[in-house]
Length: 340
Length: 263
Image (tube, each protein chain N blue to C red):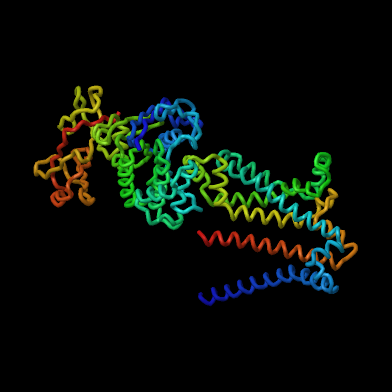
């Protein structure tokens, strides 16, 4: 299976006075996995549903493999979809669920193909079970097998993991990534969980109010957020006061490069906690306020004058950073965004 | 404290049993009386289970029974054909209309049958003109009459499943709307459809007012006619019809019960 390219072109959709999609443009390369990330109501699910044909756009076009499918109904669009809610047909077994789409397409050797797909998702022994006899994670795996069985042009994942508990969620997202890489189907993954998006996607699109705020690789989105919104939504950020001079901002005595230059003068920089180093020093300007152990890493909050700085440190450092310890605060010279 | 609670429980139990016994007597006494009266003539019950002889002896009654059974079956079919797709469609596509549809479907409940007939009479003048005066034409009126009960049953069935997600999943797999309804939604609301059908049959078998006032034949009309010539037989048939309806309602609650167990 090789994927096909998808192009969403100037999609518009309003619900009452809300612009769910505001001239959304998105190009997905063949075989690529793009995650749309954003707060609820940002239009990410609407974008996916318009691509699926389950929702009509008020304007714009949907191109799949260069063909305009905007007017095609959902059942003729050739897309596999996994939903947030459990969507297996309750009256059919896992295998029959997977066979459903194959039978509709009049495929030959239907049971063989269904068994293959169940094996792909690691549930070959569960073919005879009904949905209510399976866990949530297993149901979503079967749903994935069902969506992929029809060899869709595009795979659509609408927050498929958000109903599952944390551990299963991590397992399954890795599995989704493995399977997607294996079959190479062009995939659109919608989620509000930034960690999930960064973990699975080739590129992450951060959406806000019906538009793409940034579309880039996970590393770029995380390290070089184009706006305060993206910086804020993806990962945790310190908001530190500083002074902009040309391409740099001076924060607590350290000059940091800017992602996008701003006007000279006072500004607020968004600095990641892991870009902050905290070292005990008797003459340091900072004082440790609190420290909390989080497992492999720990979090320390330091006051420097009036400013609070959150830092992520190795847990081995924690014993030396008890509250009240005098410390110096240093920043890694990575580009930072300004909070406008 | 424990004594007070125990005493209250005892009181509640006594109250419950009193209510049950009083209601039991209230309902069973007339049935017992019917049974007693209808067995005074030893030939009545054997005749009731001997169809050829029954239809020979009481041709009007036989016609009534056949008419009622046909009406019940056709009404159930027509009701399902109209209501199931409508209820599904309203849920999927027109959720704003749900209140309105529910209101419309419950309306027949608030209008007495005798008032309904006043409105139906001119309509049926046309029905007779186009389709003839067959008793089967009552099916149209009965379909409206059973709407409140049937709608409730089907709506409850649809509430128990996530129709929207199931339908969207099926559509994304390539199913057209007919396939969605027949192969995905219907199998999952089977017990609700069964309930609606049973209620319809029970209701149609017991209908008298409309049939009588529109000069059509059915079971109840023929029982009433029979009452004038052979009282024991008419009471026996009434009792049999009541028992049949009772059995149907038992089946209905069994169908509902087995659904709960399977979950």
